[in-house]
Every structure is written in C-alpha cells, then in structure tokens.
Image (cartoon, rainbow, N blue to C red; front, side):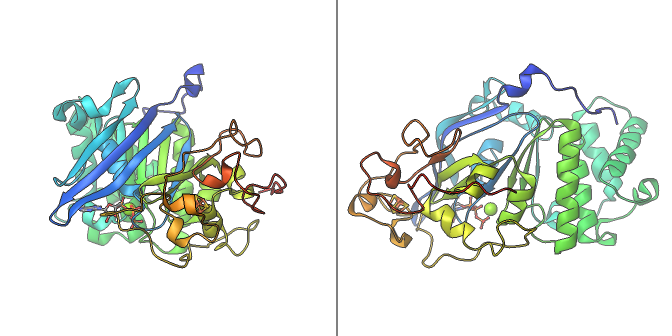
Length: 358
Ligand SMILES: Nc1ncnc2c1ncn2[C@@H]1O[C@H](COP(=O)(O)OP(=O)(O)OP(=O)(O)O)[C@@H](O)[C@H]1O
Ligand code: SF4
Ligand SMILES: [Mg+2]
C-alpha cells in the first residue's frame, strides 16, 4: 500500500470537518421540504462518528449536503462545512469535484446500482485511480491489486477481470470500498453500507471498515439504522430526528445514559444492553413529522410521553453540561426537560443513572 498506517500527530485533535448550522430544503411542487434544519457536527482524523435516526430524519441529506450531491430540487440554504479550513459550500463545482473521491469518499447502500455492470470490477477501480492520480496504467493496476488485498477480495489478481454480476453482494461492497479508498481519502462517508447484506456479511464489512479506518487514520461518518453497529463501531453518535440533532455524545455515555426521550425510545428497542446485539430499531408509536410542515416546537412532541405545553410552542435548544451538570462532557440534548426550571422526570433529568460497562 502506498499509504501505510500514519503516525498520530497533534493535528489529530483538530477537527477535519466542522459542519455548522446546516440547513437544506427541497423545493417541490408540494412546497418546501425542510430536510435538514440546522445540523452541526465535528469529526477528527481517526474517529468514527455514527449518525442514527428513523427513516426521513435527515441523515442522508446531511451527508449529501456535505458532498454537495443533492438532487436539483435540493438547496443548501444555510450553514458552513469547514473542511481543513475551507468552506466546502463556497468551492466552485470543479474544485468540489476534485475533492470528492480524493479527500472525501462515499459508499452507498446498494453496490449493484453504484457499480457499472458493463465494466470489469478491476477497470472500475483503475478508472477512478487514473482520474484522480497522475500514475501510469501499470501503476493503477498494481494499486488496484493492493486495494483488493486490503478489502480482502480473495485471489485479487484473477478477480480483476470479473464483472459485478459475478460477485456476491458482500464482494461487490468490498469493490465499492476499494473504489472509495483508492485515493486515500481523509474522510469516508458510509451511508448504510451494509443494509442490503445478510447479517454475517454485514459484520465482516463493518469490521473491515473499522480495521482500514484505524490503519489509514481516516475519519468516517457512518449512517446506520442499527444501534448495535453504532455501539460496536463508532466513537461518537449523533441522534437525528426531524432534520435536527436530538442528542449527541460519546457512544459509551449515550448508551449508558441516554437523556433525550427519543434516544431512550430507540434504546428501549435493544433487548440486551450489554450483550452482542443484532437489534434494529423498533418503531416508536406514532410517525415522524411531515417535513413539509414540521411542528413549530420540538418535532418529537406529538410522540413524546413527557410532552408539556412549551414543547409544542418553541423548539428547545441543545443543552450541555454547562446547563445541566448531570450531563457528561461532550453530551448535548435538545429537550426542554434539561432547562434549569424543568420539573423532575425520573430517568430523563435525574442525576442517578448508572454507568453501564460495555
Ligand atoms: N429529492 C427529494 N425531494 C423532496 N424531499 C426529499 C428528497 N430527498 C429527501 N427528501 C426528504 O428529506 C428528508 C430527509 O431525508 P433523508 O434521505 O436524509 O432521510 P434519512 O434519515 O436518510 O432516511 P432513511 O433512513 O430512510 O435513509 C425526508 O423528509 C425526505 O422525504
Ligand atoms: S422537548 Fe418536550 S416533547 Fe420534546 S422530547 Fe423534550 S419533553 Fe418531549
Ligand atoms: Mg438515508
């Protein structure tokens, strides 16, 4: 590999990407769909950030906005995306195109639709390398073999000439990962990369991503519906609902002490909080908000068992440890129950939750 494990430097602590107040809407015949309504996040090199939330919560559109790969009706209407000090939202399209696939790579859910069925898998990886790097064809081929080894495709040299339909779903996803890694990205965005695969293969692919991420000191944003995956693979987690961040923090803290009623609803769907889980999200009673006309106040208010008058009138801010001392460092929660005047609600704003060893 041309890029072996990098040494960790003080730079490690500087965020690679800082997204601030992202707002993205779709302007459709039915009116404005407010898909993302002010999302901020940070990610540093060598870290994995998980984004979790029900369908329609804005996970993919947040990432598509960072990549500036929105459908034409989608517009970024607010916010900044500082990547190594440059706001991605101010780059020219050509500069952004250079960055995509070079510094920032993406893997989607369905490798069959992302791969070209008429081209061999080897050619598809080589094509990406030749487009982005100033190398000869022979060098691109050698690099492709290295990448196939890295993503553990058996007999890499002889598989270069295979076509996507000759590969299983798991192997196709490995090819997609090889394409994504071909230019040594600093940030990999993986949008439900294993949802289409069976459980054993899912685990293999996620272990592979985590292993490669650590070796390459790459930052990864991993979108998933699966809280088990979040628990096992990520460092921090961001819980989204109604186009907003509802709760954020270190994975261990959020799993030990979820403080948002929505996060608690998600966690309640996990049968075994300490074991190796396969659990997927169970629907919480009620439906997610219509983003054509999201509720004025807390978007979770129509489904929340603790709802109060103020909740449906005004959007709560994100509260942190400086507002509520039972929250842990780096945890933030968008719920009125963390206001200093809020009534005591057992399990939500009580200070006595137990740290769970994971
Ligand atoms: N092309 C589009 N036109 C109009 N609205 C859209 C479009 N794409 C997404 N949306 C809306 O934006 C909101 C956020 O969608 P997004 O795809 O980010 O959800 P998600 O959290 O990734 O869900 P899932 O888990 O199902 O992938 C949803 O309300 C969705 O209906
Ligand atoms: S702000 Fe109100 S409705 Fe929203 S989660 Fe908190 S208690 Fe529930
Ligand atoms: Mg999605």
